[in-house]
Length: 615
Image (cartoon, rainbow, N blue to C red):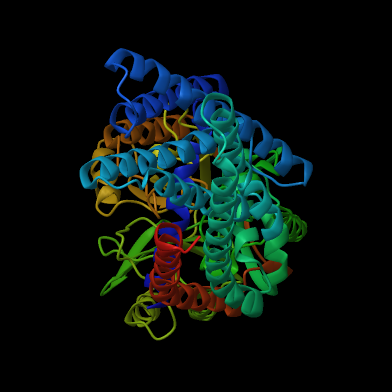
C-alpha cells in the first residue's frame, strides 16, 4: 500500500513538474499584451452587441464596445500584470516573472469576460438586468483565483497575496467608474458606487476567507507532522523546476534524518593507476529533478578522474539524500576505501544462478565478489537496504569473501512494480539463490575495457540521464562479460531481453544491462520514466557501439574490492518518508471532502449576496 501511495505522490509531483514546461514556454510579455488588447476588444464588442443599450448599429456598437472593453478590461489588466510582478518582487516573493504575471492577468480577464457576457445573455433572455452583478461575481472569482496563485506559488504571506490579488479587480472597477463619470449621466452614480463597493468587499472577504480556511486545513498536518509548510514546499518546487533553484533542499533539512549506510566498490588498475571504478552505494538517487541525490550517479562519477560506473545499490526512497552536498560523504567514503584496497590479477568467470523469481550474475574479483541481482522478466522496483544487507552478509559467509558488492540491476519495470521489502516472498528467493553460489571458482588473469557515451541525441524524454551509457567489458579466461549501465530510472519490462538478443552476435559471452535509477529523468508528466518506452532501435545501437569500443580498450589489470560505511548521511529517513506518505494520503482524503463543501458553500453565499443582497 505504501508503495502504491508513494507512486501516486511521485506521479503527482511529476505532473506538476510537467506543467513547468508550460510555465517556461508561456508567450513573451509583448505577445500576451497584444492578446489582452485583442481579447478585451472582443469582449467589449460582444457586450455592446447583446447588452440592453440603445442600438446604434452593429458597426458602431462593435467599435464603441471594443474601445470600452480595451479601456476598462485591457488597460486595467495590463497595468495589473505589471504591478503584480513589482509588488511580489518588492516583498521578496519568488517565481513571478513579468511574463507570468501578465499571462495571469490575461487569463483572469478572460474568466471575467465569460461572466460579463454570460450576464448579458441572461439579461437579454430573461429581460432582467444582471449584467453588473455578473461582472461583480466574476471580479470576486478572479480576486480569489489571483490570491490563491500568489499565495501558493510565490512564497509570500496570505495578507500580501490577498492585497496583491485585489489589484486587478480594483483597477477594473476604478476604470469602469471613471468611464461612467466621463461618458454617462453621473447624478445617480454615488449610491450605486457605494452599493457596488460594499457588495464586492463583503463578497471578496467571504470567498478569500474560505480559501484561507481550506489551505490552512490542508497545511496543518504538514506543519505538525513534518515541520514544513505545504505552500513553501509548492513554491520552492516550482522554483526548482523553473529556475533550477535548490532552495527546496533547505526545506528538506527540517524533516531530514541522519543514517549510516554502506558503499561497496571494485577498483581496476594498471601500471598507470586506476583504470576503472565500479561503485554500488546503498543510497537512493532521488527524489526528483536535480534535488538531493537525484543526479548522484553522474555527480559521484564526475568526482573521480577515471572511468567510473555508479550502479544502483540496495536502497529505497527512504535513503534519498536531502541535499547535493551529501554526495560528498559518499565520495569521501570511497576515497578512504581506495587507500586500503589490496590488488591482484585474479578473477573468476561470470556465472548465473536463479531461484524462482530471483536471478543473479556472480563474478569474483580478488577477495571480493559482485552480485548483479535482477527479477527480470518479472517487474520489481527497489531492493530495500535491510534486504541488501542480508544479501551481503549471507554471500560473504557463504563464499568466504571480504567484500560483496550487491547491485540492484533495476532493469524490469511496470507501473505496478513493488519494492522488495522485508517479508516479501522475493526476499526468500534472493536468499535461496545466493545459497546456490559455488564459492570454489577458479581464478584467472583479468582484462578490462571501458567506454562511455552521453547519447547526445537522446535525453530525458527517452529516459536518458546526463551520463548516458557506460560499458565495461571484463575478460577472464577467454570469457567476455559486458557490464552495461544506463543512466536511467529503471527499464521498461522486456527491453533487457531485447538488448541481450540484439548483441548476441558480438564478441562477448555474457551481458547484464543495468540502470542507475537516476531521478533526473522524472520531470515529465508521468511519475516514472523508464528507458525503453521510446527509440529502442537507437538505444540498442548505442549498446552495440559501446561494447565494440570497450573490447578495443581491453588491457590487463589488477583488481581489488572495498566496503566502507557512510556515516551521518542526511536523508529523508524511513520514519519521515512514511510520515510524508501518510500525511499526503490523509490530506488528499480530507481535501476531497473539504474542498467542494467549503469552496462551493462560499461561492453559493457570495452568489446569493451579490444577486439577492439587500444593498
